[in-house]
Length: 69
Image (cartoon, rainbow, N blue to C red; front, side):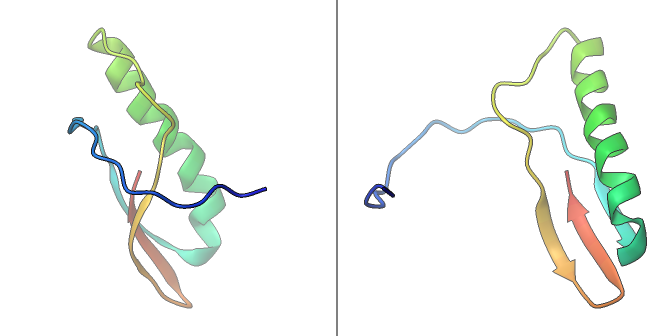
């Protein structure tokens, strides 16, 4: 069963983000490598993920995706 939604306050966290604008048909080819690149950059700096990766979509059109990963 789904829990009742609730509002919580959490501390701010810094994120590493890569901006990608890609044709719709290339989305599946670029998402995985972008996540890998972000994770590798964090690891190279002695950092690690503190939670799951996420994508923030700025715009989605029938022809393209514009997002940060």
